Image 1 (tube, rainbow, N blue to C red):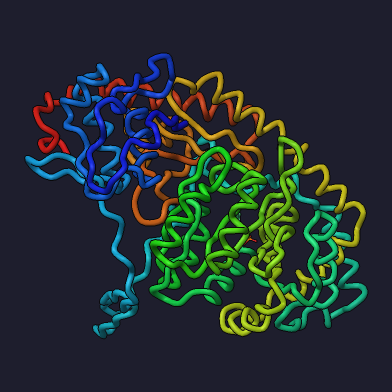
Image 2 (image 1 turned 90 degrees about the vertical axis):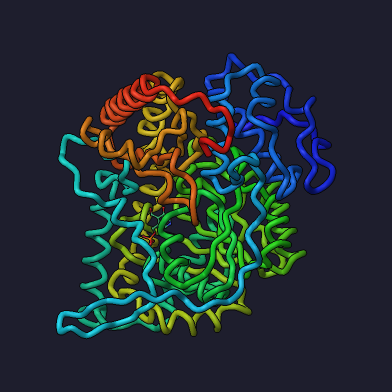
Length: 525
Ligand SMILES: Cc1ncc(COP(=O)(O)O)c(C=O)c1O
């Protein structure tokens, strides 16, 4: 992935151009990473670290091509990448410039849209953000390998334990089991979840646990508690699409924090906090969806220190702590929280099954009342029956064994995905090595667009989720998510091989369609 090629002293003042000697540091020609990508990554790293000042002019295409010993098209493609990612802009006849950061966001009225009703009436509800879910649950022919499916494996659901738990609840409580539960959640379940979290190293008190209808609802409640429409939240970029949908529906503005193999770039988060004064940071530190990376212990400490210093609370989501493949993960942020700054949202969708629709919000005592008030408006009553069943499950030794075995059950799929990528896709994709969860985040070569690729891939018998579904605002078009939780190792191998063939075909087509010789950047940008 990105390599640092420039010295930190490259740019010392805002507006100063890149110095020639740094531009000329040699590219790695033996790397599977294409040259244009290496150039774009270098410039991206400089811009994100603020070493290339907003407004400064990038070197001319000719100058950079000559200095690096590459052809003009390579540099043009690199610059296009930066423009597509919103990091640079091209101006006809003038060149390519580092884009100024977005101006501070003011509170503004939500945009409205006009709808013509059946009886001729006109409605003007707020404009609805585009659906991200429709991109994930497209019906596919059964011979298409669904590497787009983020679902857990139905074969791994604890069916016997669930049946026993359901029967025990109904036998013991009869029709009373079907009543509402208190808004904060079923008392014994709050205790059982506190005990479960503690057993996994995150001590919380039962009265600091609220039960909600799934983790996405929990995140929605937490975000609404901390932010108003027009406020800013920071989140890892790429980020779980369910979170994007929840927050976009609130009219909250999201600003992405870049990630690398150690997780969120906390150094960049610090700069973004100063720039945007966000109301919270959202993160999935352990086996992030969609990247599968795990925030390192040092960065966890740095993130907590930053949050405390700047007074910005953190929403930490955990959906897959139990599904790790490289040894135990570092402690949760909640476990390390000495200052009451973490709202921890725990999903049980991968531990039980998605339709359990019961999750937990574990928050500092000072926030519980406020969260409960918000919950009252959004999600007053999670399913009373399922809360009781989850409580019963958490008492069963068989369910504990199921959770302990889960990573082992998913491991062959994880190994199959890594093996298939390593053996067949090394020249066609770059990807982040996942440490847990059920997803891999990969990048296409030559600036190919994952949305354009998808129909051809489905025609060839494989589906994936296009990268833009996981990116706030713009970007991610050259990335995709491959999920391995709900497909067998054999399906994974054939899915990846089909995908590689489609990429090869698109690359070959692109090579046959020669680009006009770019005489100046502005002709192509
Ligand atoms: C990061 C993340 N959060 C939450 C969920 C879903 O959680 P729930 O079903 O509890 O809403 C998923 C499901 O895939 C997920 O990947």
